[in-house]
Structure formats: C-alpha cells, structure tokens
Amino acid sequence: MPITAGNKGPRVRGDCFVTFDPEGGNGFKIHVESRVKILFGDAIESMARSVFGFYGIKKGEVLIEDSGALDFVLAARIEACIKQLVVTEKNFLPEMLAANQYPSARKRLRLSRLYLPGNTPKIMINAGIHNAHAVILDLEDAVAASKKDEARLLVRNALRQVDFYGAERMVRINQLPLGLMDLEQVVPHGVHVVLIPKCESAEEVIKVNEHIQRIKAEQSLASEIFLMPIVESARGVLNADQIAASGDNIVAIAIGLEDYAADLGVKRTREGTESFYARSHLVNVCKAHGIQAIDSVFSDVGDTEALKQTVQRSKALGFEGMGCIHPRQIRVIHEGYSPDEDEIHRAKAIVTAFEQATEEGKGVVSLGTKMIDAPVVERAQQSIASAIQLGKLPQNWRAHHE
Image 1 (cartoon, rainbow, N blue to C red):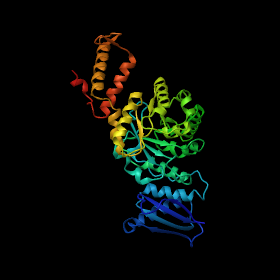
Image 2 (cartoon, rainbow, N blue to C red):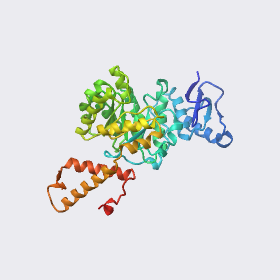
Image 3 (cartoon, helix red, strand yellow):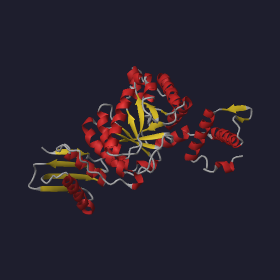
Image 4 (cartoon, rainbow, N blue to C red):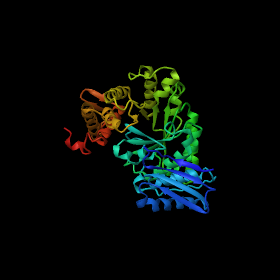
C-alpha cells in the first residue's frame, strides 16, 4: 500500500507531496511533477535518490508532486515516508548553516515571539526578516495529530537550514508525554528554548530536563537549552511558583489565556478581567524567581488599536513580552513594551548616578533626595539595554548624556 507525506493543493507553496509504493514497478523509479521540472527536476530526483539510498531502499516507485520545496523540505518529506516503513534511529540530516550556529542568553529581549506552524514550510522560510525577537516552530496546536511525525522532521531540518536572522529559535513541543518524543528531533539541532505547553506541575519540567540531559550526554552536546513553561489552566496558575523553581534553565513562564478561560468556563475578553488574578499572580511569581513573564497571544490580527491597548495593560501588569501570530503584530508589540522617553531619561539618570557613586567608592547611591537600591538600578540597566537593542538609544549614550 502506498505511503505519503507532505502537503499538496492549489494554495500550497514551498512544500511537496511524496507518495512511495514499496511494491510498485520494477526496480526503483522516481517520477517528478513540478512546474519547474525543466530547471530543477534532475536536482529533485538526485535528492530523492540520496535519501532513499541513505536508508538502503532500492525497490519501489516514488511520485514527488513539487510545489517549490527547498532541499531541506524535500528531504524531510521523503524521510517521513521512509520512517513509516523502516524502524531506524538513523536521521538524514542536512548540513547546518553557519548562520544558524549562534547561542542565546538567559537575559535577552523576548518582547515578541512569532508562532510558525511546524508543518507549513512556506511560513518558516522568510520568518526571520520580520525581526521578531524569537520564532516558535510549533509542534503542538498548529499540527494535526496525523502529521506529528513528519512535522518533527521538518522542524528539525528547519532548525538546521532556515536563516532566522539572529532570532532566538524556540520550539513548542507537544503536551507531555508526547512532547518527550519531540525532544529527540529538537535538542541536537540548534534549538535555544523549548516551550512546554499546558504545564501544570514541576514534575513535567523535571521530566523534560531529564530527557534533554540524556540526549545531550549521549551526543556530547555542550550548548545550553532554556525552558519556557506555558501555564494554561487553573492548576497551572496555582502551581506556578513550583514550576518556576523546578529548573535552573527556566528563563520565562508564559500564560495561555484561551485554554485558561476555557478551564474556568468563562469567555475571554479584551479587557482581561477574567484573567487578572492569573496574570498578576504569574508576574509576581516570575519576578520573585528572576525570570521573564510572557503574556498570551492577541488573536485578532486585524485590530491594531486593540492590540496596542492590550500591550499597554500587559506592560502595566509587569509582563515583558507576548506571543504573536502574524508579523504585522511585531512592531506594535515592540513599541508597546519598549521603554518610553521618560523611562529612558530616568534610567540614564539612575545608571549614571550609580556609576558615579561606584567610582567614588560610595556605598549609598542617591538621585536628588531619593535613595536608589539595587533592584532599581538593575531595572534601569535593563531599560537601557532594551532601548539600545530596539534602536531608541545609541550604544555610546553616555557620551551624549547630560
């Protein structure tokens, strides 16, 4: 019986649909259907033969219906077909681009995180040009249950091959226990942050970390992988403090308000009255543990004014960023969460006073008649760092500070 992988249809771009009949024809035959067959047909066939040869398959008939798939997509689709037939731990890995070999950092801006469906390559390919602080390759809600296995391979190849222009590379795995399988195809291939959806307990974080450490040990991986649990239920909110304390590599906790509202049995509103306790509680937990609090996505991509208001309320509560589901939301989110002119002016004054007091050997820092303690200085330093990264302040701002 023929097996298939990939996507096809009049609206599909940057993908392909592969049909493999292991009993079809005599010997091994590959047929390519593509509007660019004259230009790239031989290259598509060559790639297919490379993948099938890697797995030792020498018999069958293959049909590749191409819609502009790049090599890493084509390889993932063919491999997904093969792995429906062959039980193997081998992986056909594309070369990892040098542009993708950059580390992340615990303390970095995460004002915006752009969600990308994990089984839709056309959306991944140019996602980095939108300048989101992070991209999320989503293996959970954005992928149909029947497509989970092939999405893992596509996300793995995208981590290695897609240039995200310096954005932090995140992957939202599936809800546990299924998500533990995702880690096998994610951890070794340049992911920076793993998002744990519908997290309700510290035990879930510990399980994820145990799997990550096992994979890293087996493959001698040295890169640090951060975690961002997502709380999406009443239980998750109540256990947020335990979750935040469950791993040294947790850099943030996000809240998912669609599922949280459903768990409460209420309707989610733009004002957010129904989620005020949960969001305020999460912010306080994150601040207490020195990690970032990340707000939920705003689902109406056409209402920019409502998004602005939502970001203003979110920032006022203490959140430090939010997810987005469309590139047009990124600029609004960056502007809303970034420090305004008054905040920047005060931050510069605080940092300057702190540096001057340090040079003079003073144990007490003051600005005018007010004493400044360490948390205020740290917050001012973060505001300046944000302003510099967002282009609101030059690197050499001290030279211009009055």
